[in-house]
Length: 235
Image (cartoon, rainbow, N blue to C red):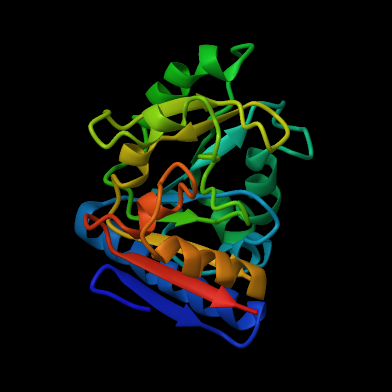
């Protein structure tokens, strides 16, 4: 199912997807630098983007004018294996991409509730609207750290709330987290949803259908009509 706002791109395998998507992101970032003098890229964690990060890190573009930040972060030390910042530093900010400016969300605050405003202030350094926001999706329909059943979910999905960060304690996932809220995720010129595997394709199809945003928060991305969404999928 495609629409004016959601465009699907299907690939035979994850390697082909990573190569194609890295090329697309390169073009977006280059154009942003040419037009506005800087570019911004919001990325997500998890295992899915590792291959993409490796492809993107070798792309030749003016990385010193590119700002990279996160859609969400687990509230762990940045050296922790669960840290999204660590993932990005080890898989994306290498090779040519080592010259990019990185702004993380984790800070010295003891909890994400105490650190969310701090993280939001840090993000003011990143040019926005963001040129590309790259999101993943869980089998439960979450995206970023906007998990079904989280106490802060209604506030995070409220489209009238100013762009910012929200503390999330997901009942179904380890670690307290901080996440960009829906308004911040939609403060973008382009959103990419990167998913792999047949199971996630089925979840995506369910999310395209009418239903509760609280049940499947990724619906808030797929069913909005403000920012174009490109869905990249491979088996």
